[in-house]
Image 1: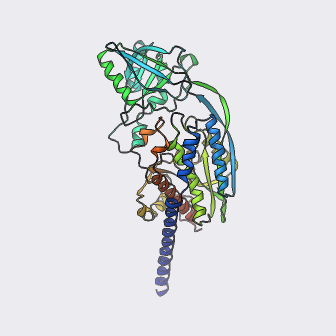
Image 2 (image 1 turned 120 degrees about the vertical axis):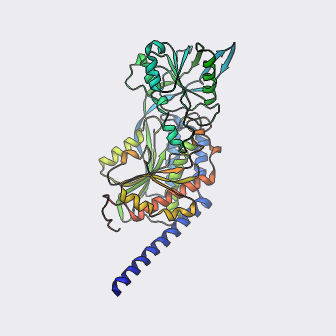
Length: 467
């Protein structure tokens, strides 16, 4: 009996020591990020010296070279470029749009959606049909759609606390709106911007024609939320008003680009990989500071903070800066293909692609045993006001790495202001707060440290073998 009591006491003491050690490590990580961070400096260069980094552009290439050089300065064990073919689409001259009501010409702000075809040289002018979803479109049919511009005006749902859920509830009109309207003979599409705020910024984003024949592919543009309101009100007064818009975008042949990768080799389990990353490409209207410059520099800083804090990883830690998340996901697909071909065991992958705002926690794609382990770490994060630990997915770029046994996660910052800037001209450096960005980098580093130290449980419901 005495032996059993002593064993229990020793086990509790060991667990307590582990917890105490983890607390001190996290404290050092947060202190280093907040007093000696690098993420904000890197973001300033990406945003202000390079700018928007659309796949296939010169700026995207400059970003590849810059981040590779900065990772090399960190003294990592290995830094390299992974080639990947990406689409090349250019916006061309600034878009124009207006409509006439009661003898007055009302100009509105629009932007071509990524991947759209151009209008004719002189633009397109036609009557407008306002709809809120594809069911309304189908109900109107070819008779009432043919030869007209379809105006999708379904707003993001304002009463949803998760703005990403609100975005998910209406983004299909942007992505598939032209494909659906083209089937009924529409000559163009205007889509309300994915934005909860009323302003004059149109928000771009990817769209698709699916397998629609080339002769049925119609120009598609986003209109600002203020513009959408004005157009909708005008249509109430005159259902036969005409809308004019002109855009000059063009699709080119694919070009070669790269994922940027750096790693610290694990000293105990070098063939178990943990990755942290964001996407290096961005849309072209702003400089991509929140989407996803923030995720890129936070991920870079994770490896720097590990080294700076004196942490020697057991497992191999990689930073992956993915190319072409915005309009193709080619970088993520390529990375996963190569990893599979090399039979690399990715036990944990963390993505930051939700802006550089104050971190709240993480969402996870994990089995129940691994998620229970994560919940056991919640108290370690409590002093830093990190409280959100929920099942519910990870990120687009790490998604292709999912297996039945690994864990994927996404950093979840406060999302309330994210869609004010998402894919718009105001996604710029001055809208990123230095301290919030650095808190995010520290929070990511803390989670990577814990997964590196404790590993994962390969099968749900099984007891973990100690490292």
